Image (cartoon, rainbow, N blue to C red; front, side, top):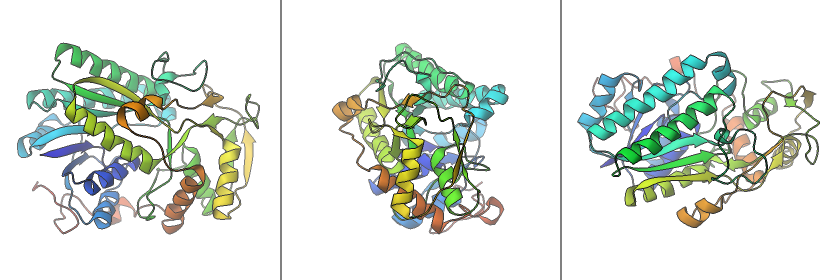
Length: 357
């Protein structure tokens, strides 16, 4: 029996694949590599010495996706795949609704057809919108403010309804806060396309000389230094949370929802200071106009995950910065270009185990 990981080549997906392999699981990855690189999975196999079975396909291709279920004995699904840029979702909302929601419906239909009724779903703290207070617990009102966040919220509601209609399902929903860092090896990490939308890859690209300076959106928030405060969590801590969520999913039924965060917020300037302290690299920055819809302060109450999953974030902000810098400094241009990378349709080696196409 294997765990199917959709979107397994992405930032969080690749780190979770590594933890799954290290934990003794067999895994199958489905990814169309639209915003990821197969090189990440190649490196996961190099770190772990274990094989990954990879299907390079789009989740919207139902016929191809069904072959994954026909060819394999799947025990559960960890569902990462989806478009994730907030700004892009505002400008191309139909693309996000079609991709994220339709893909989830198709994977759920196949899971139901082949009696694989166990899922861990990758959700987001964006479902909380602008919270009235902090820390944010799972019972807070849900009011996503952009199409990306609304797709996450709609999928959560679909999964709730799915369980109501069929109580054999076991679903764990994980609401992430702000993942940063990288694997301690410096061999896998965050590699966004174009100018990063998130703080840490923006900082590391300034540090490596690819960008001139960091832009900080807003300086007049009601925070310790006027810049926005967020809950930053090490991606390895987050990946380990998925294994504990998977354990619960495999041994229970129902729909369970958990925040994965540290329970502490850091301002943008505090993160910059921590990065400079951790690396010795100066980060020039300038203040620019705040973005519409950004909350001043947002951080998690992770008590429920600690109580029910026995999960707690272990790594602090300095370690997050050190690991993010180790990744970026070792890979100043990220993973190799896709056209220079391994072609997952052709390679059959000790690094990958791929189905015949």
